Image (cartoon, rainbow, N blue to C red; front, side):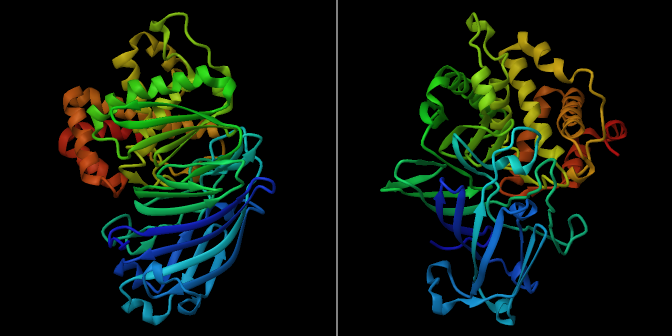
Length: 450
């Protein structure tokens, strides 16, 4: 398969051992990007190395050739520096003349026990009695910021931080093989084959690749406008799984109409022990607590006033804001979190207006904080949520009030079309807004921006 010049191609061979909570990984990434090859190094963000005892790098090798020629005699050891959550791979001089560079990494990931509290990357990786969740599990190629954007001419480094999402994903193509015990299933988007414990996946134009390994979860499914939606859940949580499916059945057509096409052929929802919800390309995880606490309403009109449904809607919105349009989630988290949470408001006011007061109640009295803050400004989840989620939603609602609903929908669609498969930056988004709001934007900036 050829390597697209505008996006990298990852290939993984993973052996998953649920008994020891360990992944052994052979990763190869092929690049045909002359800008990055001219820098003399390739940089990866490695969030797992920000957690003690999780990531163990074994070898790094290079090939000045396409991925399929990954024979041992064509690979050469590379000089590397792994410091905190940043991996730098030094390139030979010949790499500047190569059309394609392949970087091969061998490493082990020792999954920690799944966390129950807080919003952090550590909750996107873990094991529990439900199985293994591999969310932020692999070294991610760092974006290279062009000279005209945010200072320019540098690798975008995202140090690990225990609050927020210390990662930035570019659109990439993925080929993944996961070997697991035959007693377990591997849950991931893009399944192409599964035989005798070997599961193969291919997911193109994806923001990131996540998977789960479990021998306890069953699947409930539905078709939503041609999209295969599957919920993987404990058998005793079937009623909650049906509610999650209904939430997608209601929200997905709404978002398609307002934002544009859903980007994948399927959507997977996975019950997990981890806190809250987490988005990945075509896959979302949700807390077991939300599945267990779900209570069906006494009447059909009561549907939706439930945390599981609410956050299914939120994470579904991330398939556009994070998925279709990427952003720097570490330094500008308000860009994706604000629009994903705006999708909650849009869902309730359109389909369940009687629940708007219920939706707003937890955040009604929260103070408005500056939204243009990186995750590194926050030491606790509560303040981070007030800024990146609650305050940024208020900003977008004020923008809609100034534009009017129809014009705001047009703006959102223009934003999606312009930055599809790219990383959008705050300055670019504000420039788009200024084109439409003019001086009125300054009044919002004085309220919401530091």
